[in-house]
Amino acid sequence: MFNPRTQVWFEHFCWTEDGLCIVGKTPIGRATVVSLRLSDDPDALEVRSYWVLADWHPPED
Image (cartoon, rainbow, N blue to C red; front, side, top):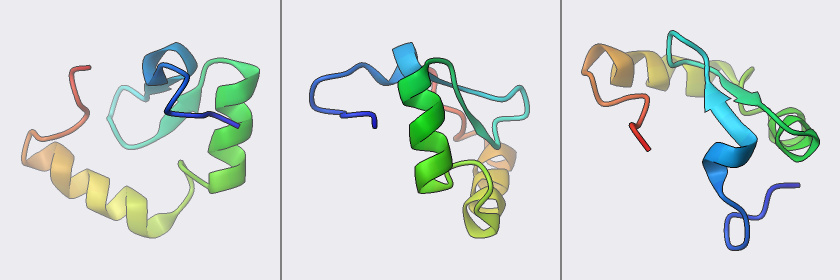
């Protein structure tokens, strides 16, 4: 699992081109995405879609 205190987010994750889903780039990233349902939670996807429309998301870095 990803530890934000000791690991760098962008080394383990990236956003899909539409900015809605998080993709794990490493085994740690992939396990975290699946375990925490970071890319298949309907509520999170809906909120992110509004953030994308407002040009608040995805973050630059």
